[in-house]
Image (cartoon, rainbow, N blue to C red):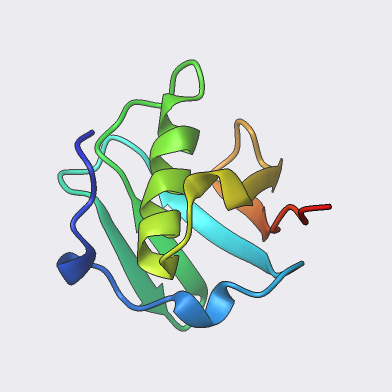
Length: 95
């Protein structure tokens, strides 16, 4: 998966709040990379196959791009091998 283009993604910058939990439904092996906003929440489509965590990383990168943050600020809390995933946004504090 190449670097996602911001112009094709919805603006999810409002989700970039420390401690924010983001529930997404993932569709791997899709025909395109996209994020869709629906009545039932966020739906993330990625072209990557779900093996060895590749799809999880693709989802994390796509979400981070739409939010305007670094992918390292998103942690997969639940759903390693499920379609329903819970990401948590966190910013490491500098001491």
